Image (cartoon, rainbow, N blue to C red):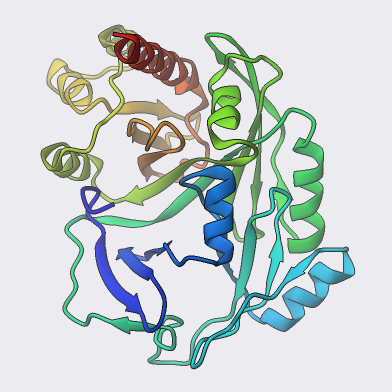
Length: 321
């Protein structure tokens, strides 16, 4: 996270918990023993044990969740800690229902000693979406969970090509589209989704996408910091040259930074790049949307999955050597 430009904004007042941030993104790293996070780590390894969703009224959101048979969770709350209502997601992780803080305050002030001079090194602005890898028979239950308990909407299902089989994807989104959760399943054993399920030991985060205003500046900084980026084959850029009227200099810039590109029928544009998986589990995406592009780069899925399969097989060969 440091190489991606995140700064340590604060330290928990009584626990081994750090607050990392950049732009509007906040990530809580929890290494507290004998905690929910620790038990989740024991089951899944490095993982996303909880997600916080902003709601207008936490009590009302929890009541709705319970009315639809959601399972509330209440952990140990220490002295001067903020108690936040939460429910269990279908994978056993937690969803915190967080109300806005009072004017001039932060929701982190109670629990954390904030470093007022901490500054992030990058320009990542917000979480664009968070994709999940699910067992093939659980997609409908996840969709029902988010639609009923949290009033999300579901996009149409799409089928995507992996070198080793097909992947089905269906995106969930909040009513204002500020929260987007693509859900991915595959019935084939060797696809990227199946490998994610195996390494994660069950359902879990597949990748997290961070939005930015200048992808070339962000990727340049990430490369210099040593962030391992997914290598995209050069023939992909030959294909872009055939599809779009790009000059050679721009295509060379895309290729140098391993940036993928897509354009929709309305002229919206997407630029995105992927990191290598963190400890073989989940990975990060840096993304820039222009002119109202609302998709996820479906046209680039085949080349991205092929690049990941090549990277994965290369890592296996290196491990054998």
